[in-house]
Image (cartoon, rainbow, N blue to C red; front, side, top):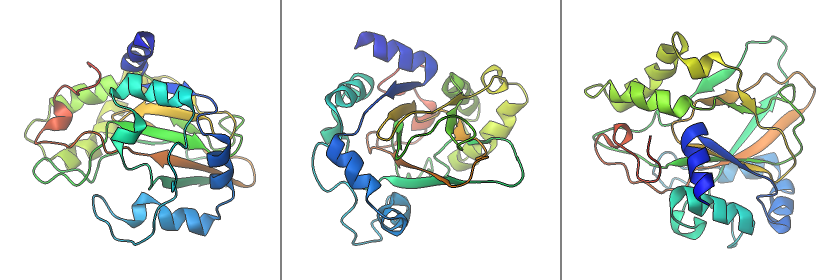
Length: 239
């Protein structure tokens, strides 16, 4: 498990195949788009419970033993202690007529140094069906970009956090070694997962095939952000 922590610290992501148990994979695949949208954490707003929906993950243990062990090695806590797994975000990519390139960003634009609205230290992407390559509209990440984001945010100590996060990727795009390289596409089968650092630059590749790519994002409530917490050393991995 020590090697998992080292890989995650360097690359900023870790892949786990067959991360969902068979029943959880079947449960999610049988949910309609409307149901997935209603239970999405987006419906609640950042840090606010705006819906009475019970959530999607209504049972304990939706993840495989390998995924649980990997997540614990990264975060230092098992999934049951992290929380917020009942409200994943439903995400999709539709076919595009014009190739606009990659959409890339870092999450956390709703966070604020003075009045934090939510907090997490890992972003977990889970496929709901097979994704072959970028042409399927794959989720993509730029390995090592979390380190450059960390340094960029550290250089903005007096700037409002949401503004710093919004400006960070365009700023790095002109001089980042990580963003100059080709991203890693998350291809795989239904139930496969990718655990990403919360400062990882990520996005979607343009979908060039008919249909819709569907997946879920889990954002565990692990770190309760204090003032300037994003530009301090994170607890579970040394940057």
